[in-house]
Amino acid sequence: MACAYLRQQQASGALREDVLGEEVEDLAMDAIAELFERNERGQFPELRRYFSDRDLEDQSPASVDDDLRRLVIGAVTDWLFEAYRAADRSLSNLIQNLKRVIDDRTDVSLGRRGGTLWVEIESASGEAGMGERTTSAGRSIPMDVLEAHLTGTVADAPSTSDLLDVAVETLQAHSEYRSAYPLTRLAQVMRAARVRVQAVTDHDPPVDVPDAPLLQEDEIEAAIERSLVAVRKEKHSTYVETGKIDEKTYMAYFMALHDRLEARFVPPGDDGMTHYDALSRYLDDLSQDEYRSQHRSRFEYLEQCAREHLVHRLREVV
Image 1 (cartoon, rainbow, N blue to C red):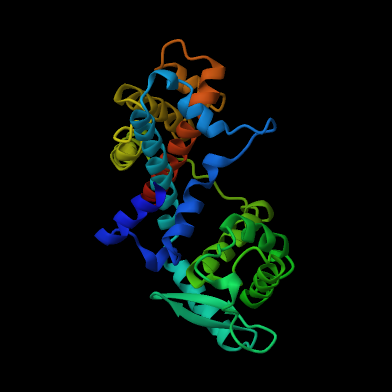
Image 2 (image 1 turned 30 degrees about the horizontal axis):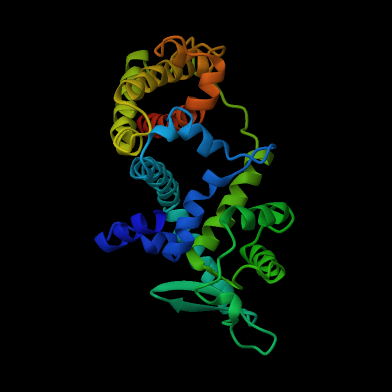
């Protein structure tokens, strides 16, 4: 189902292969991987959560397929959104730097596969590794796995050349994956590893707070409204049109998001308000367990999108 949806995107020209730099089958696996994460009891919590309010015994196989298709398409759409968000100028600069580093080396080279540039590891004989591990039947190492290996070395090996060394060693050590990787995705992984380390090692310097706020309350409120409208329109197809949640619940999410953003950005604020506190105001009889099992992941993701959109707006104004 994920492959079919991505092929439709590819055929219509909507799939940005210049950004993703990957074959459809591999993209599909990465996009739906989270649906198959297991908990400590070996269960699939995402699948159980999605089908928990459906009586499968009373549904026809076709109806169950339709439900599953909506789940898969929603997962792929969310994954694509996150992947595309990484396509910016800093990534372009990193790609160019990575190309220069590769040009100066003999153990790796760049090869084009179907219009996409790949970083290919040379074999011991000096030829690019195009054997069984690099055929279309093999699978590329997942981005999060490669990122985990790079993150551990960023602090001691910050240069692009150093990170490429670790990437090459990782691909050579994992024989179950291809000994090659799309150039664009490798750059994405390197940048993600750097950002992760900087997030825990960098600290903002002290700042002088002006006597008067930079923005008036009504200006912040207006920015909140515009941000929520933009995110609501953008994500409507992902959540409502695919059947993940109904329109009423979707609107309750955004009323609660307004309260969350207002508590965070409009003085004096309310640091004690939780996600559950905000949403329970608009969903009747919402329990903590129900929030955690049915709403938390979606609501917190939408809150993150809205907050990032708002911060970008406020920075532009300031």
